[in-house]
Length: 331
Image: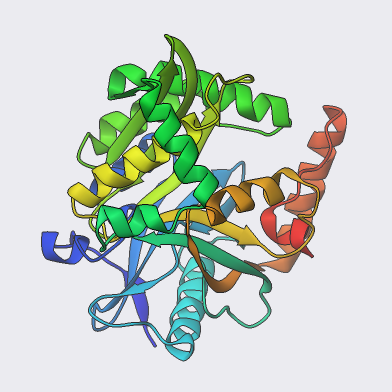
């Protein structure tokens, strides 16, 4: 299979059938952050994958921002392997990338190239092409009770760009409590401005005037994605985080999203960790899991060894642990 960089913009009809990382607005957002951004396609222009390239000193690293999608049909594992293998060759030969790093856990692959390192990854999602009553009925009974109680107690749910600062307070404090890295405030302001209200939801919840929780969702017709969220250290209403997601689901459904993707399900090394709690939280919304893989591949092993050594040295000089990506953490 021959894969090349798509030179023309995708049509509006095609974009309605593809996830948000394929849209021009998102590409422009990533370019504004200093990345190169491409859409790769097969010869027939039926299979597509979005790609960003990060330049790190003298090294170029590739990251696919979503698994490949075939318009108007499902992509078989055989087709997917052939396509992503050709895409990996393009990254190495044409774009001079030394490695393909794993992307975010908003999608999973059903195949991976030879000599790649892969681990299993499930994707939680909720079908929004049902009635609100059917969706709500699949929630855990305790969640339904908490949501109704929050509603009866007058929880205040707010939307819009003006809520980015409040959302960020919840998001940053949650990650700080967990000792996890996170994006800065400008990241969300810039993404909201780039994608606009048609593709982003910034939502917060207040109880008795006190900030409880917040979430930042990117969506289009193909799907909405639960990527960024947080809550106050102490919440007055247990149902605030459940209520806010339920409200966002209703908004996405009304605007035509086919499903709500709640992110990845790790299968190894999660017992007793924050990931176990997060996955239980998603599962109790009635989310189904679709199994797949996440992977990475060294395209130039010699240069990867040099890159890894320099990165290790930088971390040690700063007194930091060398972070593990999602693939290494699951091995």
